[in-house]
Image (tube, rainbow, N blue to C red):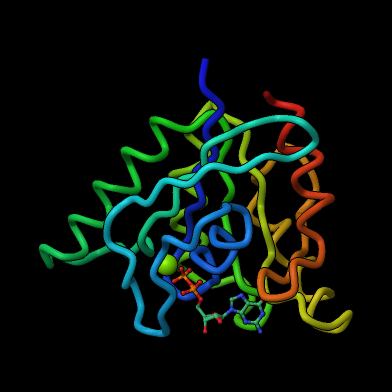
Amino acid sequence: MANIVAIVGRPNVGKSTFFNRLIEERKAIEDNVSGVTRDRHYGHATWGGKFFSVIDTGGYVTGSDDMYEAEIRKQVKLALEEANVILFVVDCHDGLTDLDKEFAKELRATKKPVFIVANKADTPEKAMMSAEFYAMGLGENDVFTIAATSGSGTGDLLDEVIKHF
Ligand code: GDP
Ligand code: MG
């Protein structure tokens, strides 16, 4: 069976930045505009001698009839179905938001391993913020703090992720 990792979470938490760090080619669109990555993007990555595919998704948005948001939701749902491992990205700058909590509720239904990835942990102070993400009662492991821009923390996370492959 193929090894597939889905990167999900609300807009602007750094999913595409992280995706680009993981994969060899630059494919995802990084942007400050929320939900700019509307489609699913696929890339390939290796870690610890394991080969896997990574899916970047658009930001998760709830409670809107907007077609654009409906399309994002559909793409996220498909990515979740396809994946063996789910990386749920949250943001240490913003802390735990209502949208994160809603997303966590949906992820709790999945039988797949979910890793909480607390991104933008640029400094030890920011990394301390990640403690509040445990309150979501989700994730089979610890909350992993990373900084997608520098790559710090991503190795420890990937060491755990590839145990599922
Ligand atoms: P997405 O909407 O979740 O895909 O988020 P993006 O990858 O497009 O990133 C949104 C913004 O967060 C961009 O301005 C990124 O440069 C920024 N960002 C991503 N990772 C980090 C990080 O580790 N630290 C900081 N400070 N900013 C980050
Ligand atoms: Mg994106």
